[in-house]
Image (tube, rainbow, N blue to C red; front, side):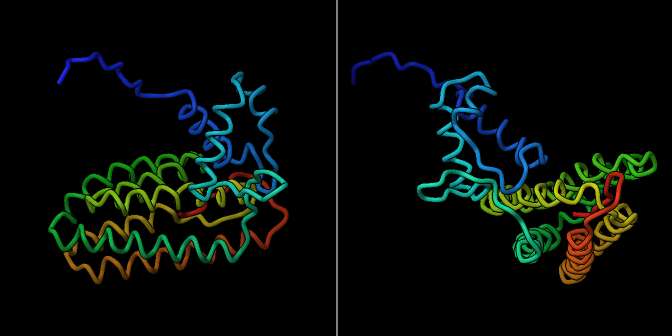
Length: 232
């Protein structure tokens, strides 16, 4: 076989950079649910041609983060209470499987030790009323827990649900939440350390029951100020 030179593949293409930036704007609430996304406007905003914008929109539609309507365009989905129930139903299945795998394989204590650092950071952020930081650490906690299973497929499914959870959090950021995020996650650590997969998944189920109820209450509220202390 002739030794023809092969051009190296760039690690980050322009479209992938645009995709991640657009993902961030959607999940942090800068681009509001229900908004229609214009290729022309986004291209001007990002200072790029319409090609990378089109590719980014197509990718996020495929992931389910955006919605494409025939003859109308691309929209940011509007989330409701049915979406809350569905997101947490799927998360419970994925994260429950990850917890059982971690505990059954004897990695529960090791995982708890790693997550304890995030708990300390959450406690400090909560003490300073930095609720957006608490929510960020909260998502890292759950992502690390899923990653501990060593399953690329569980990790991929969780990543999509994490984006939808962030949209829900952004939609309820100005509505009263609850003030016990640290305590609930400490309970998950204790369950991991028991070495009992059933106890660990029961603690996770209890955690998600509270999270669903809190999110539903926040969706019912239309007034209220300050940052939210949602648990995810």
